[in-house]
Image (cartoon, rainbow, N blue to C red):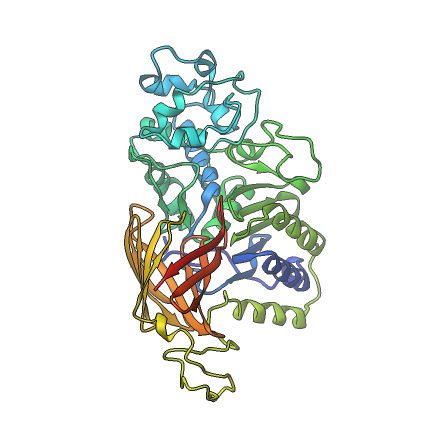
Length: 492
């Protein structure tokens, strides 16, 4: 057992001692951060961590939302339940949930098995998730949908199918997936502080919503790589790891795509004989058995295909036998990790001007930047916004340090650091409290604001300009399923 989230459980080593090139790892980190916003990277070779780092404010002791990487944990719960005789992957879905189905179930639904839920071959022509999660009772909604194809014959990615697995596990065990996994998987691996979002019925969402630390993901991948063994103990049911990560069904025929190499039980098959759990915006647990390699990333990257391609480009040729020490490259890698941080408005090198930033008469500050009174009329005055898709009605910036926002869903008050992150706790978008970090500064006559959810991939960066009584806010969300670009028009 560990006493804090993210405690070290894997041994550490230099890359070269485990046959990995420090230069290749540095090239991978540089390429990933050039591609987009990466929050953490951990590489494990021969069971040893050879590279690890977090972009501040992300850190080793923070959990990170996994999105669909959660599916692989839910699949693991199914494996345990089967080993305990509570269900079997060839059970019919209606063997467990008949009371939630329509009086006259779809004929193909009658033939749907747990195996079809696991392999995303439920028979639905399209992903059933939106039609399921838009209803009050998710399981009933799923079971009421038409099933156009014979189950087991048509692959389509289907997060709602994973929710049904979670519902079945809860029904046969009497426990949430998270609680069921705790003594069987989480405690043996030293995973603490894990959380799982729930449906309106109090069932773990299954296909998304789990949060763990970077090293938790790594030990999970290493457990599967070791065929379920951990510290000499068979943690996973014997044979489950091989079965769950095998190519159970085809899902395409593109040899250059990591999304067309087959699918297992909530694990993707990939190039180079790899398999992985993966979640939106680059939450990856990539296992390469032939190289005895586990690669973990948490990120806010939109182009996940390229993110994986960079792993193959740099690590596959960079992983071989024991190498001679490369002290220069290793020192550069460590320095790069040490300085890794998301940029903060008004941070080092930024030209900061405006209220509270020094003189406001056009004089020059001690660091040589020109100070001006830009934006003083914004501080302490409410900005009322035109109707917008974000539901933001008004905002007040109080002395640069506090931002009061009024949304359709309610008010939010954020503490804003000057050139550094400050923490607030809010309850708005989700039915539980969330920590939010914010930093702001007057830069070149405009107010720049960064807001980050340190336990999720998401963040927002905007630039606020004032022209008389007119206020314009322009920026973007770092990663989103729909519109990312922000443009708001308001008036003082």
